[in-house]
Image 1 (tube, one colour):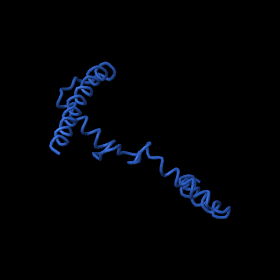
Image 2 (tube, one colour):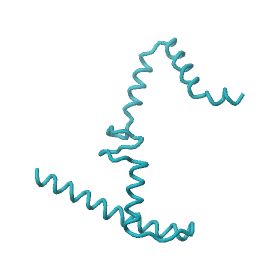
Image 3 (cartoon, rainbow, N blue to C red):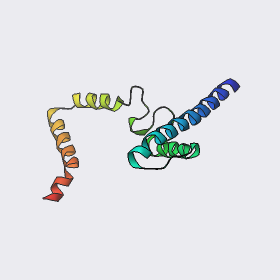
Image 4 (cartoon, rainbow, N blue to C red):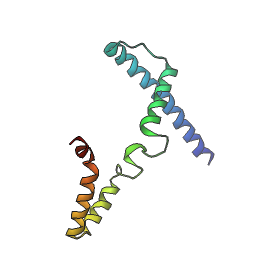
Length: 112
C-alpha cells in the first residue's frame, strides 16, 4: 500500500514539473514571437496548467472533460442510442426525429 501511494505521489510530481516545464517552454517560444506577449516563469506556467485543467479537463481521473469516463473515448452512448433506435417502430422513430429537430431548430424559428 505504501508503494502504491509513493508511486502516485511520484506521478503527480512528474506531471507538475514536466507539465510546468512544457507549458513554460512552449509559451516562451511561441507567444512573444506571435503575439508580442511577455515571457513567463515556471510558477506562472504552473498556474496556466492548473487553469487549463480546471477549464478543459477537470480534476477527475481517467479522461474527464467532454469524452466522459468510458474506455474507448466515451462512445458508449452511441451504442446505446443505436440499440434504442433499432428497437423503435417507424412511428416512434418519426416522433423522435420530430422532437429532436424541434429542439435543435429553435433559433431558426426566432429569426423568422
